[in-house]
Length: 155
Image 1 (spheres, rainbow, N blue to C red):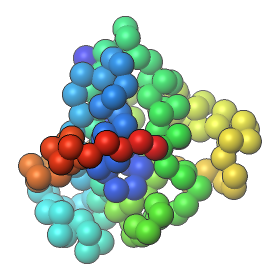
Image 2 (image 1 turned 180 degrees about the vertical axis):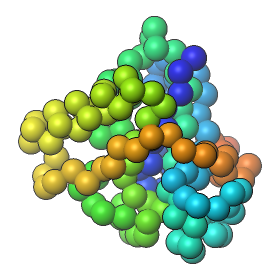
Image 3 (image 1 turned 30 degrees about the vertical axis):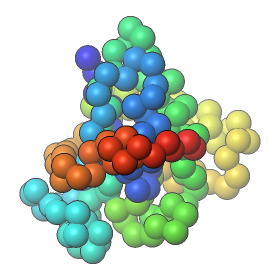
Image 4 (image 1 turned 180 degrees about the horizontal axis):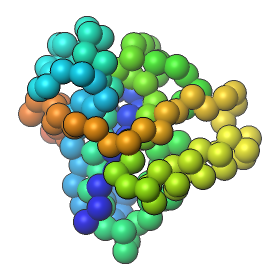
């Protein structure tokens, strides 16, 4: 299995969307890109740790490609908003792709350029592409948030 990590605003919706993708074998939500070990949700929401809310996806590359996951990512949020998604604003809601290896970085760069050129996205894509960093799983009550509450969530 391979891993991919995406930040696309509040992590509940993106996790629910990625979990429905054929070839995705597991998802978790957590915090990445900050400077504090084991941050809490309250600390991340306060904006003092530098972390982004993120979804870590385990997937079978024989079934779903990195490119297909990137297409999902672009479609599930507005990648032109800096540190904001809808009513949520702050650095923790930034749009970012955390790449686990060189091939993921290349795929992310190519996908971002293609998305920008496609005209599907109005405005400039501000999504950052960064090397994988320490990922801290969020508290249990955030994991599979919508599924646990019987809430369907489309995008």
